[in-house]
Amino acid sequence: MTENAAEPAEMRFDTVEALEAYLAATNQPTNAPGDTQLRMLRHAMQDTPPACRDDERFVADYLTAQHRVELGRICRPCPLRNQCRAYATRARPEAGFWAGQMYDQPTG
Ligand code: SF4
Image (cartoon, rainbow, N blue to C red; front, side, top):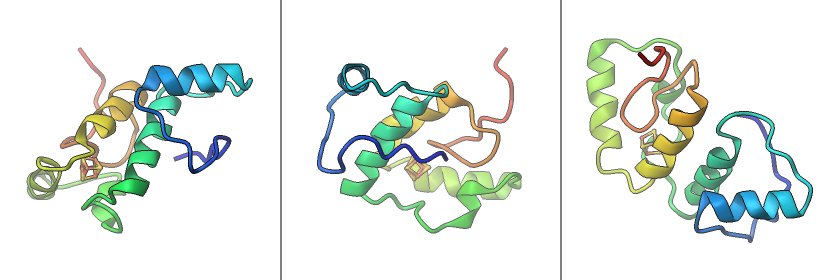
């Protein structure tokens, strides 16, 4: 994850569009696919620390099928799942487990 701490920590945005409008208005370009969604996810994680926090399996390059099942069970009830999926769908991170799956495979 890249660090983009440009917006004040106390600011919260209800939608990606609201955050993008703020970034555009304050001349802060988003630099990579999923950057805005990642900022939204980080904000949400500050309010609601997810169960994956501090679990190294969630940032692994490779997971066994068994680990994927286990991590999927952790993600399923996560209140941040929608934000997490929004980031991963857009950024398609090469490593890690996001919102119940790995995104290292190209879409068909
Ligand atoms: S959905 Fe995302 S934030 Fe929630 S536990 Fe899974 S990887 Fe973590």
